[in-house]
Image 1: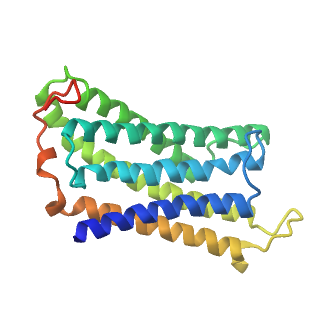
Image 2 (image 1 turned 180 degrees about the horizontal axis):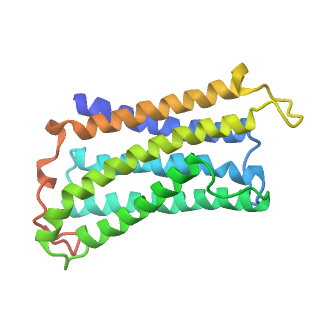
Length: 240
């Protein structure tokens, strides 16, 4: 029951993260477009939070959920969610790069951009290696067993990097847009206007979601024993 309550809460917090970042970009930042403008950049936080935080967090929790389906379907769903997250994260990076190019802004100059591009690269590599190692039927079982601890550790590390990058991105965007300069009629960040309060609150929700996911992953009692051993070689959905 404690796991179920915690898991439902994590799902609810994930949905709240997505709704909040959409509202931030839609209400305070002028909406969305795909033309190199500020409105295109607004897709960046939406896509990155949705992919690297929410979808990623829910994908790595799948192995804790007491499901009645086979290990094959759990693996396939895990890989499918992560594939959607990879696609959305790449689109999020593209939105930022297009905006920078259109407005003559240098690429990859900030710490946020460094951690972000590293996270996306590691995430994509982790997904590809996971597909080859755990879904392809000809992968040696001994190799799977040896790779699994590293795969799990890397998955958690990438999720933590995603949280750090998201928080630094929220803060960087507020510092750059609420600066009270260049004729802007918005209040500076230091005055803590409504947008700053909302975006800061979004950051807190991201932190709570991330900590809850990590708590669910760290509790050894909530592991699904049916998914612990890499002794299967799935090829068809009904394979064991």
